[in-house]
Image (cartoon, rainbow, N blue to C red; front, top):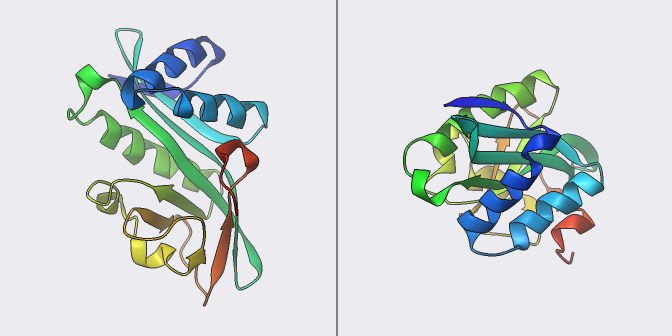
Length: 167
């Protein structure tokens, strides 16, 4: 298996993967809207024999802490082909993408995801708890890529319209 930057040639396979993994159109449509709005910060695919078996997308996200903007991204969606799940593909996608984001100067990542999966990579619900958002609880997590990027008393996350989330 190899991890590489997504190319235009992967778009149809990524859409099909998201439909299969999530059982509907929502995530495939989210990816389409984020691309159309020019918000994709990083999009990686996991390839086996030329087939897309996994995908992870990070998009620009408006985050402020104590009124100061933070250079942040949202991790959404991440998908693995149903017949290839629980084999480490998602973990590899996360593990290989975070250093890439750090090298590109992103300060923080926010995710709404499984609380049993993301903490192993350093994501924390406690760190995200001070960020006013449409989400709360153990599935809403954040990770600092740059030490202190989310330091402060209180912050806010504003998702772009592509997410279809009211504020």
